Image (cartoon, rainbow, N blue to C red; front, side, top):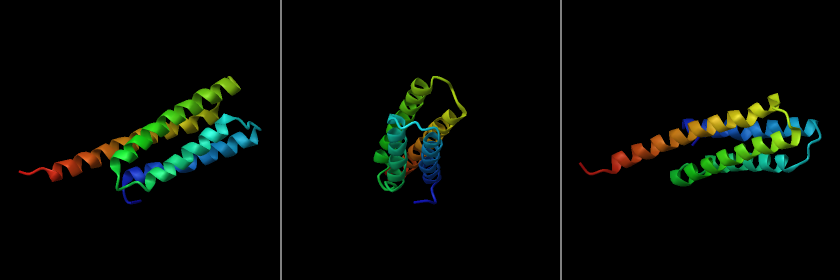
Length: 117
């Protein structure tokens, strides 16, 4: 499961929200942002273990992308300024999009092998 590239992307997306939580915790922001970041990390971790169910993995990645966009908007409305800390959810979004592409590529490969020629 870790030997696939999307698992590596998802592992990084599991670690980055924890770093984001730690950086926000330093600034004493105990809002919905912390809950959303923790949820994003949990969803990324769970998605790694759905490696046999690629369609579910694909849906969870899309859900996590939306969650990271909501983290960005909530952080912007709470702080009001684009900060360097905002780069962490943006990096997560790019990694999740790359993971979705790799999952789609795996699904297409499996479908092509199932065809009768």
